[in-house]
Length: 348
Image 1 (cartoon, rainbow, N blue to C red):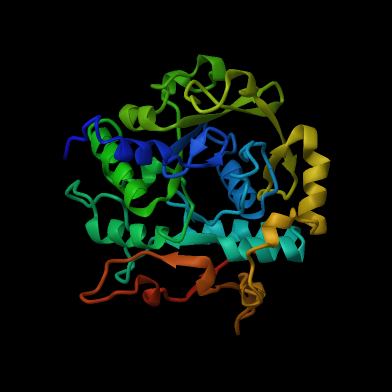
Image 2 (cartoon, helix red, strand yellow):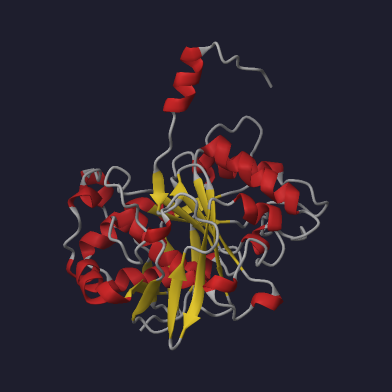
């Protein structure tokens, strides 16, 4: 810690000039946000829609920044801690099956899945069994996030491991702050409401409506809320959205891009336009600007039959971030990314 005297005008001017852009409406770079919603309302569907929005610059759900300067394609990592890499892979396969080849190419170059299984075949969490920070895992996570703009965690409660949402709340807040600061990556985490707020409207939710983690949630720069609106679902900015004018916080009615159990959320009022964009391949120019020719190779997961005629999925290394404990003197964590072969259900 050090003091900065008010007579150090140059230092003050430099600090004042440092201003992060926005990755989503009300969410600055290098900060975090919470998505809260009841069980089975579709938080994971929203997660994938946001990831594809950030990668392609197609505004699936109306959350891309208003400022054109901030609306640039982003690199995204998805940590499906509550479900599994197999589950996330089935979702991604189904989505890419429905998108146009050019949209798929962009998504493959910018979206990654995190494999949280270590070499001993144990699942890794942010905290170990002694409630201490899982340092080797977190350090490697931070290292890989330096190439990522946004990390989406589904859900934070599961990613914590045995850590309690109330007892370890402050530890979680401090850890997220460190991850964000060291990686310069924004974090969006999915969270459940407390029992008393299940079924509540967006207006009834507060900064303490989450199931524990009240301090962590209070430090989030924005709370995105999914609530039921009649027969539909509404996306709101909740009570924590200081970085967006109040007249711009109108709820967004969500519709469906129907893909059976793998459906995605899209803005209801622009549903047809968005579906046309992602299925026709007419991408916004900025989505393709930074793709090099060698990035356009086919890196997507492949479904194939094995010798026993069972369906399997090959997940290329490029689509999976393998996070595992570091070896002594190992400088390149990515070199330890191992191929994964997972059984997959047939996607119709």
